[in-house]
Length: 277
Image (cartoon, rainbow, N blue to C red; front, top):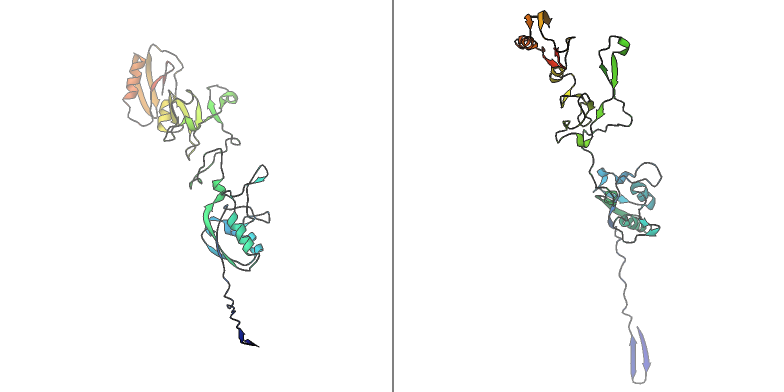
């Protein structure tokens, strides 16, 4: 305190200034959102902390380089070279964390479980990830083929090649069963929307799985060599069972005799005006 003496005057100067002590430094918490599994800043692999498993996990970052290695480079969108300021998909939070680590050596970072890449506008409708068990049928590199007997006595010409149809989304019903309107009689088809990929043949307007009882019943095993026979007589054997017909029995009588047999896998019908079994 200084005292100035003068005639009739007493002046005192008092210093009342003070200073607060320095407080402890604070560590910021920065919540960010990034694209999931984004490209790494190194150009190979993906940043470790951008996977789904790391969403919602609090991390302590101590350097800018460490931040970029774990979360990748902040992405900012442009439109024809013009930066989109304030765009919702810009990774502003990650850039803010990078800026903070430029002036101090510690920051807490929490990545939200939001995939910014999934929010990018698209011309097609967004879809979720395929469910477990989903498989893809590569039709462009898959070859199908069926050999069908044509009855030629020469073994070298007895088999003809048939290219099966491949059912599309509109060729099956809601239960993934081939529609009767798909294909023509005699066609073969593959239904890739079932795990078995079973071969089907269209017979009399219905698709039958090749090798099943229904398919075998619709296919003749033996065909008579005479079309439109007036009468049939004699004894013949089917699957070890002898069938006797009356003298000059009409084809209908032969069918009735076969009908009486209960042995499995004996079928009869009129096939192209010929008796078939």
